[in-house]
Image 1: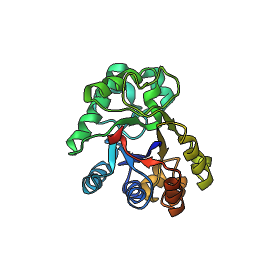
Image 2: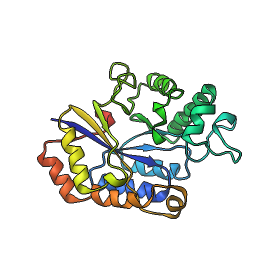
Image 3: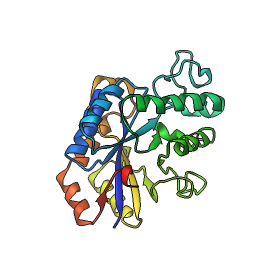
Image 4: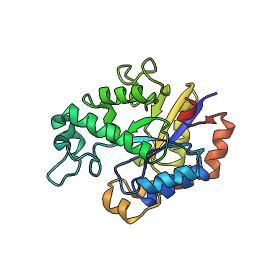
Length: 246
């Protein structure tokens, strides 16, 4: 039997995102989420998490969205004090600044009164050459699993850390269809543990004005809460878990 994590990224981005994720957990197939401690909806997300302790909540490490929590990380920000793009990050970010900011984000998560289930990252920045060793260090320090973002054995293997056997990023963009999700689920039955990434949300002003990926999130929400999907998962013998059980 495959044990499956369906993780909703971007918890804390905004209230609309938070409520969409919660709906996907309460009335859908989402089992896990990851929280962005640097975004405006972080405290609201923490409040919802405390009211629903069965929802696994990890840390969504951020270096490419919003502003840093640290003030003394000049290589990470542009002239407006916002995080640089991923391409710029790879070129100019200093490892010392990356570690300072990501450590602060982990500390901020604990300060919200939550215990993290695992680590992943916005835009998969923990796959970047400069970032990966720092995330590995934090994961070992806090004894946390990490999202496996690559089949390449050099990236976050089970030998170093707890993680799933495979990770599916396909439920995104054009892949957001009921048939597409079923195909991903079918592929998941070939391994012992798997994670599917998703981004459900209710659309609000912050999301519509701040994210290039907005409207498809409402479609994700509809699919992830469709009773047919839940029933199909049950008939396939897939066991829904969170990173607590990895």
